[in-house]
Image (cartoon, rainbow over the protein chains, first blue to last red):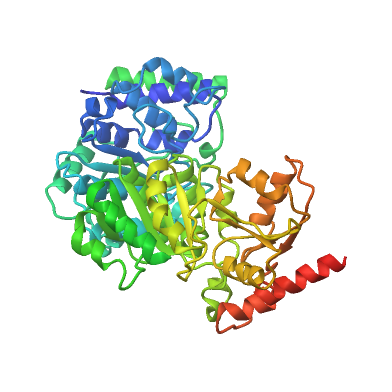
Length: 268
Length: 297
Ligand SMILES: [Mg+2]
């Protein structure tokens, strides 16, 4: 199934606008990553809740809009569900919720989903499920949480080669640039030092991310894909601006961003 | 009591292929058999308790019934948010096994005095909480937990007490008079039984399952008594005293509730729990003293 990230971005923009929701920056940066993740697994098995499905865990739970929109574009969720995002009585909360069909685990506090993902990878191996994988999406701010490194140490020790972490390296965390808070440079070397198989790719290239996922699966250790992204990608006034972790869109901003995405879609 | 619990998990693993044992590098000369017999359903995640809880949630996602083993304070305090989010919100049937309770680790200092942990667990609605007081209750506990299919925490005291033999969640040992009732759990039940041995008029109520409380049984047990002492190696507000205060606010119980419990951390070294039982009046003589004072008015 081929999904156009710009179309997903449009859905996300509308969800955030209509739901008066925040986290625009981190939702926009992760879209190609999510599209690549769902492209790499059998979505039908996710939809059917098959025991041997691949597991996708969104550890940076605040990119819920992007997660739900991507799932809808892959046919796991009905498109109409997206209209309820961030609204009264909906189960589509501003953080990823397992009340939504097809979501593995509720997240929102950082440094949780990746550990659950490791447990899934271990459980899949114990159950003899070999034709599936576990993909965990984490933020570059999120990896400041110590529990992230507990998960990685164990995954490497247990040789969980069905386990792949994707880091949304948008280089901004909550209020400012990550390098000003905790400089993680050189990031790839840090992951390598922990024994992981490390790839670094353009986080806005679905093809590059997908091929990294495929190559990790042939190794005997878990992998990390550092996806270099732009926070607020394709929303010109929001790109690289930390404040778009918190703001919601005005009518004017929505129209401007929507028109820009339309032009990108026409040109893509 | 730890042996009964660990051994019954091991026994259940034979016929129940969903049982998975996870340790945070604890349980020397106890957990090795899991790795030897069931290597595919055993994991030592290392000194990384937060990861242990997350891993258990992932295993539960795969349909496993994980049992996670470490010292009580590490299991609960260190992992509170993991327990809340990854177990509680998901209502995953994960059992946390916490070894040591109260002052079991007496000389090791306040970080290892486990006097405030189940009250923390109690704040998460989904979790059943157990504290066995005898080997007979401990021996049946895993079977009961597997039947309930819910999150659980077992606070496992050091010791192998034969009494009480009854293995109910609440055991009512009635005295000759319906005047004084001692309510307790875990190791302090032995001190209460000691009081009763000297004064057969005293009754003892053993609460092996701290949540949910069997309210009908509890009501019937509490109603007759005038003075109800809650004896615990845990802070009272978040402990059983707090639970019973909440309970009697809803039911017409006439008796007065009196807490015997520590109320703060201590930097004292005690070479055994006895030191702290004496310090806080939780041993048989301390309890007897408190009874005497209360009766004097
Ligand atoms: Mg970031």
